[in-house]
Length: 391
Ligand code: BEZ
Image 1 (cartoon, helix red, strand yellow):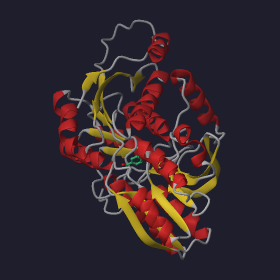
Image 2 (image 1 turned 60 degrees about the vertical axis):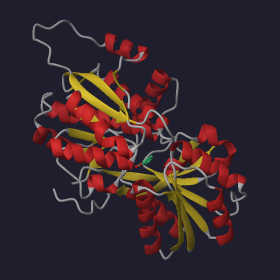
Image 3 (image 1 turned 120 degrees about the vertical axis):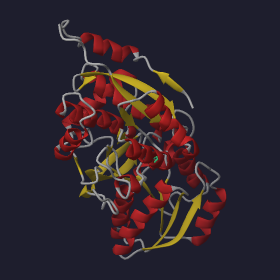
Image 4 (image 1 turned 120 degrees about the horizontal axis):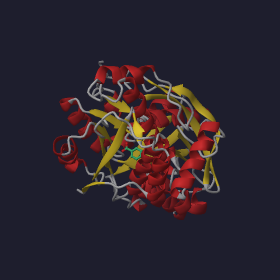
């Protein structure tokens, strides 16, 4: 576990300096402490960095302040390790006394964060982890998500695969909440559409020894395969699927994390893959064009879905704080503002469900060169059912 207060990157600091206004007679409000709990090591390290980049970009675009409060960031590397999650989140809540938590990527770690947020009343914005429980049985007035539920992209892909007429589908994923719930959402829609999941294969997170399972898929000869992998694991899976001779023989479909932020490393092995996600590379929306330009300028990189979710976590924090004039202890006013908000995301505008999960379009994307190109909307304004949420 690493903990440190970050200094701003040079480009963002320059943007902040340019937007500084004249000195005021009013005493400055104390800085708002934001605890970023993200993975900076392990298979999801790149995802954590992209979320932080997106978050900082939005803050910089607002002159370094949200709701009139200057932002001070505290960071923890959660290593995507659920066994360390409670200790890690307590460092931010108890030691650093942050006003707001933003995190994380891994569903198992996010559930520990949600439990701590619920118990202490600390505001929490989840900028990736899809754990259905966070906006299901664990839902709370102080917990919000800027990303998705695991059910959402899985369900949308189940509809797509059923419409294609695939009847006999094998699934393969990591055995933990995100993989299990993604497959569950997929299966729900596939079975509604007349298909069947005939085999559910899995391996422990974050293992990448896929060979034995790929041999099983080859022997089963299904009509199609559905998968959830992300980050470094997704890169290896797509490469191994092709190396096993399955690409072009058994169609592979995935939740969009399979090919988001990974195409550079996957190369030709990812060509033409179809995935479903709440973001794509060439949406052509003016809001997205501006975001992509600004992100590329600040980081010399193209953004991905994780960067968008980090950016929108900061937007959501800004909306809530503006409504309570920067007073993060006014949780009712903060939550009311977000429940009414239309969030102007690069992905397209979205609202929050009663359980505080984005109600959003899920795009069908196809890999073309280094891009996940949108080839249509797979599911319009898809709302997670929020099963078990009492709020
Ligand atoms: C999750 O654990 O919820 C997750 C991790 C990476 C990408 C998407 C979801």
